[in-house]
Length: 294
Image (cartoon, rainbow, N blue to C red):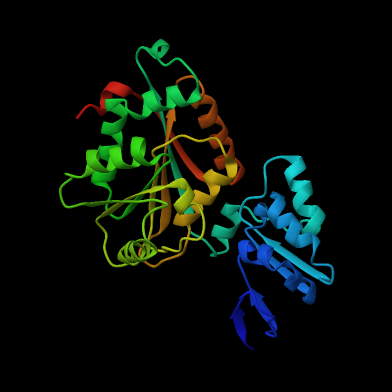
């Protein structure tokens, strides 16, 4: 059977593989198929994907797959409206027991800050103050420096978080610190993805947007959330990068920094609920920020 990636021409192949961006520019193509398979189906809540699915008028068979259904009822209804009912749900723990993914352990670290009252302002202001806290940065440094393998460190912003963290960690002995983000050339991204399979001394800093989906690095065992978020999809999809099976690891290990300050403590509590719903192994601890001074 011939499999051909879509081009903006009439296509006679029995299977068409396409990004939604390409389909939107030549949407009449989808009317010719009687089966549609949508990967990462949580994206079907977006207008663009819904537009494509609404044109699949001859598709008698519709299948959708995702590791994270949308968290709200309205978004879930949007997905079901175009792809049908949910046939089966598997939790991460169940999939791990069946041998499809790695077991996952979450190290959930509550950090108690002195002078909590100084963390004021809007969400972005508080988050920036916390990220630049020298004790918190010291905790990140000590953690990634002592791990026995490659570690993925996820950030939200390029200059204020990714580049700052790369400079802060760059002199760790026997470790190579790399930062990749949206403007990093595809060839460089692929190079470091392959290096993760060959070495065990890489600290790879990346933005959530870049590493949340579509990255296959089976040897990746450690993940540290350097930037706090509350999104269920962002959190679980990011963890999914570490759940690939590989002979070099027994499980995936997540480091979640729960910052006990306004806004961020609520976000941390939400992430804890996500972990419990997936039945991840959770090791929760509380620490004073001064314990992390190097």
